[in-house]
Length: 194
Image (cartoon, rainbow, N blue to C red; front, side, top):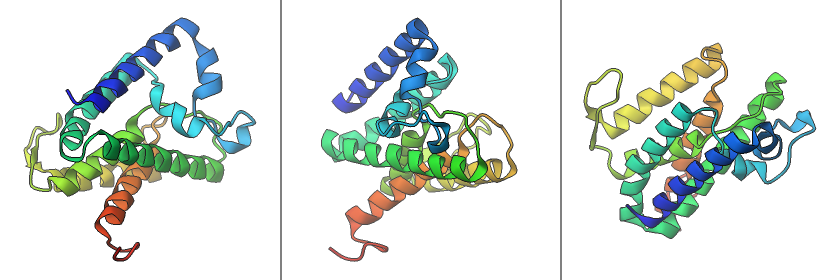
């Protein structure tokens, strides 16, 4: 297993164990709270990505991190993947803060999903024809199709308010962050040639 992914898995699992031991105290300080909540702190833009709402939430995110992040780290190396993942987590946080500010929501956000969605975008852009078989429906499809469908589903669920309690716009922010970093690295619009 590549070193950065291994360290991220260990860190996320370790923080989850701390959550179980410390309860809500850790959420009060490290979850991503809306700006208007009075509980927002700047470090939460990164720290929220190490917290998870349940064991299942953690398991799915860590599986995706291992599956997609491991492939990307083997191609890019640890340093480049770290920059990419951090940008995706940060963009996901900014998108979530924007949406909670517009909707007036005071609920905190936790989870590595925004970073994971950035990794999905990176994976689809590096390996566009690689076949992915989702759990539901179990139909093999090219990575770029999978990411486009998943993004469309997230947008639909976010706009309609379905599946409340899920930070759909953070997921979309992660996709956007991954896309922007890839475009920047490739010298493509909106960044122009380097």
